[in-house]
Image 1 (cartoon, rainbow, N blue to C red):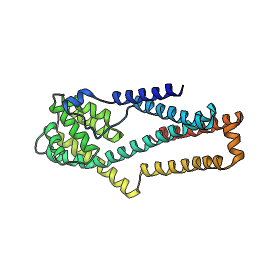
Image 2: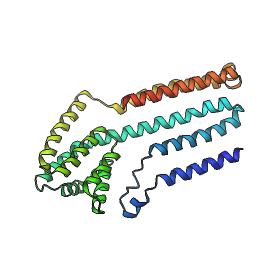
Image 3: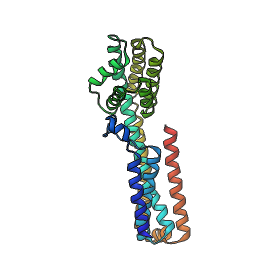
Image 4: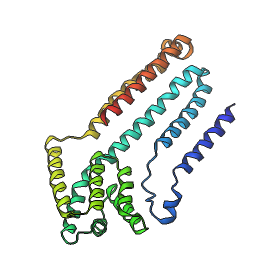
Amino acid sequence: MIYFFIYLVLFMAGYIIFYNIKIRERILGWKNLKRVRLGKKGVVILNLMIFLISFILLYILLKSVVAAAAVALLPVIGVYSLIDIIDKYWEDREMKQITFFLMTMAKWASVKNDLVYCLKKADETRMKKPLGAMVNTTLGRIYGGMAPTAAFGILEKESRSEDLRYLVKNIRFAAEKGGSLRNLFKGMEEQYFKIDEEFFKRRISTLRDRMAVYFTIFAVAGTGIWYIGNNPIARTFYLSSFKGNLMLVLFVLVFGAGIMVMTKGQK
């Protein structure tokens, strides 16, 4: 039975790797391989793999299916939280680069009212990741034969932050309908400059706040695990008795539900 679970985990590992390989983009040289982002299916499969591995190891150690299943959920919750923090980190990076990107695009749009030309000039500034890599990839798609509107449509889907999606949507609309790119970029530059100024004045950092909340929550969970592990009576009750197993499952489910509500509420 254990070997079956091991083979199942290896199969899922192979599937998740294969699923996230964009073969067509690799052939055309569009994909920036250093910038990998798991899709929803990839996250689900990754968490399922972690749960199965944790469950097998904990079942061997605890000899209880219910207790092993309950404790095996904690690494899954931890990975889910880590992915959320990483996504928020890259989202903040995107938002902080938008103003510089708009300044560059507005500068070159005053020279030539051509979207691809402005994007090429923005790429030549060697912006840092993630926006620099996204601009380079979008430019590669256009040079590979894709229509600019279609390339910016993909960029909109790849964007993590709502601000960048809003910006890309406006650029795509301008590319479809025509008009003065300089006026578009200049107006949006002033808008985002004011937003950046308010963030700086108020010292707003959603990433820092989220990390503080996660630290507090997992510190409480860690204290509970330490208490159960070091108190013989609590350890026997929660890990060996049926009632204790059910309470442990309930605690873990409430803990996981709280994490999910918090992450969904802050998006």
